[in-house]
Amino acid sequence: MEFGEEIEHCAKREVMEETGLSVKNLKVLAITNDIMPAENKHYITIFVESESESGKAKVMEPHKTTEITWATPGQWPAPLFSPLKNFLEGKKYP
Image (cartoon, rainbow, N blue to C red):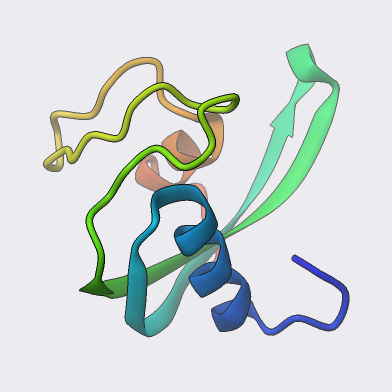
Protein backbone atom coordinates (compact mmCIF):
# COMPACT_ATOMS: atom_id res chain seq x y z
CA MET A 1 0.00 0.00 0.00
CA GLU A 2 1.07 3.54 -0.64
CA PHE A 3 1.14 5.95 2.31
CA GLY A 4 -2.42 7.04 3.14
CA GLU A 5 -3.99 4.76 0.53
CA GLU A 6 -7.35 3.08 1.19
CA ILE A 7 -7.48 -0.74 0.93
CA GLU A 8 -9.95 -0.74 -1.96
CA HIS A 9 -7.96 1.84 -3.94
CA CYS A 10 -4.77 -0.15 -3.40
CA ALA A 11 -6.43 -3.36 -4.58
CA LYS A 12 -7.82 -1.68 -7.73
CA ARG A 13 -4.44 -0.12 -8.50
CA GLU A 14 -2.49 -3.33 -7.91
CA VAL A 15 -4.85 -5.42 -10.06
CA MET A 16 -4.52 -2.89 -12.90
CA GLU A 17 -0.72 -2.67 -12.56
CA GLU A 18 -0.22 -6.44 -12.41
CA THR A 19 -2.92 -7.75 -14.79
CA GLY A 20 -4.35 -4.87 -16.84
CA LEU A 21 -7.84 -5.58 -15.45
CA SER A 22 -10.18 -2.94 -14.07
CA VAL A 23 -12.22 -4.24 -11.11
CA LYS A 24 -15.33 -3.09 -9.21
CA ASN A 25 -17.48 -4.04 -6.20
CA LEU A 26 -14.53 -4.67 -3.91
CA LYS A 27 -14.98 -6.37 -0.54
CA VAL A 28 -12.36 -7.23 2.08
CA LEU A 29 -12.57 -10.97 2.78
CA ALA A 30 -9.84 -11.68 5.31
CA ILE A 31 -6.36 -10.91 6.56
CA THR A 32 -3.52 -13.39 6.96
CA ASN A 33 -0.38 -13.16 9.09
CA ASP A 34 2.33 -14.56 6.82
CA ILE A 35 5.74 -15.49 8.21
CA MET A 36 8.23 -16.72 5.59
CA PRO A 37 11.40 -17.83 7.41
CA ALA A 38 13.23 -18.98 4.26
CA GLU A 39 12.89 -15.50 2.75
CA ASN A 40 13.32 -13.72 6.11
CA LYS A 41 9.99 -11.95 5.41
CA HIS A 42 6.86 -11.24 7.45
CA TYR A 43 3.77 -9.87 5.72
CA ILE A 44 0.21 -9.01 6.62
CA THR A 45 -1.89 -9.84 3.55
CA ILE A 46 -5.34 -8.39 2.92
CA PHE A 47 -7.54 -10.54 0.67
CA VAL A 48 -10.03 -8.58 -1.41
CA GLU A 49 -12.82 -9.99 -3.58
CA SER A 50 -13.94 -8.10 -6.69
CA GLU A 51 -15.71 -8.36 -10.02
CA SER A 52 -14.05 -7.73 -13.35
CA GLU A 53 -15.15 -4.45 -14.89
CA SER A 54 -13.10 -4.36 -18.08
CA GLY A 55 -9.91 -5.50 -19.72
CA LYS A 56 -8.27 -8.80 -20.55
CA ALA A 57 -5.83 -10.34 -18.07
CA LYS A 58 -2.23 -10.19 -19.25
CA VAL A 59 1.21 -10.27 -17.68
CA MET A 60 2.06 -6.63 -16.98
CA GLU A 61 5.17 -7.30 -14.86
CA PRO A 62 7.19 -9.99 -16.73
CA HIS A 63 10.11 -9.52 -14.33
CA LYS A 64 7.84 -10.84 -11.52
CA THR A 65 5.71 -13.51 -13.25
CA THR A 66 5.62 -15.46 -16.49
CA GLU A 67 1.92 -16.23 -16.88
CA ILE A 68 -1.60 -15.61 -15.61
CA THR A 69 -3.98 -18.54 -15.33
CA TRP A 70 -7.49 -18.96 -13.94
CA ALA A 71 -7.91 -21.82 -11.47
CA THR A 72 -10.98 -23.39 -9.93
CA PRO A 73 -11.12 -24.26 -6.22
CA GLY A 74 -9.27 -27.48 -5.53
CA GLN A 75 -7.24 -27.24 -8.74
CA TRP A 76 -4.68 -24.69 -7.62
CA PRO A 77 -1.23 -24.62 -9.22
CA ALA A 78 1.75 -25.65 -7.11
CA PRO A 79 3.54 -24.38 -5.23
CA LEU A 80 1.03 -21.95 -3.75
CA PHE A 81 2.12 -18.50 -2.58
CA SER A 82 2.22 -18.95 1.22
CA PRO A 83 -0.33 -16.17 1.99
CA LEU A 84 -2.83 -17.86 -0.34
CA LYS A 85 -2.09 -21.23 1.27
CA ASN A 86 -2.74 -19.71 4.72
CA PHE A 87 -6.02 -18.21 3.50
CA LEU A 88 -7.21 -21.49 1.97
CA GLU A 89 -6.26 -23.44 5.11
CA GLY A 90 -8.37 -21.07 7.24
CA LYS A 91 -5.42 -19.35 8.94
CA LYS A 92 -7.06 -15.96 8.59
CA TYR A 93 -8.80 -13.14 10.42
CA PRO A 94 -11.67 -12.87 10.95
